[in-house]
Image (tube, rainbow, N blue to C red; front, side, top):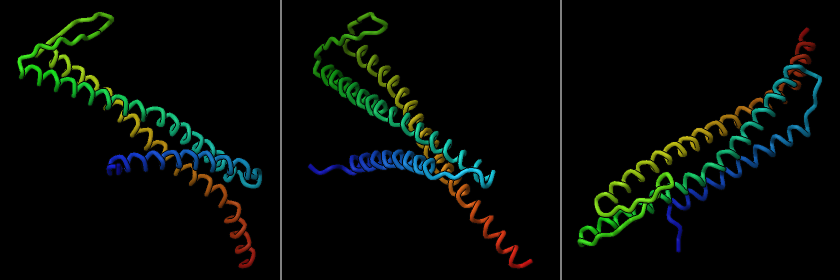
Length: 177
């Protein structure tokens, strides 16, 4: 069966995020291996700042990856509870009394009909709040990961550019003096 556009989008997004995390740690590792310190204080500072920022980006990306499945699990529960609520509503329309056990705080209660539907509504609302919090956390972490990655790469570019730029500037100054 062909994938829906949403399934394709989710798959591509997750692949991109794994790639970004791998790229972050790869750039971090390569920059550590190829670092040369001591020639310029500013370059050394930008190099270290780049490492720390890339490391931070990678860790935030890993933490984000931990939260994404939680959001999907909560969303799945919402769909399941809504489906169960619809079944109760359909049963009520047929004048069938369905008993639904609910466990809350270690205590089980059995509700039916309108009371069960109202309880399902409160469960759906609670799950919706949990989903929104988790979704916001995932979105914030992605923004932090993305910007920390870009800033970290920027720091490394500046660090690696300082020695050649200073060398060229010194040569040009010597030529014109």
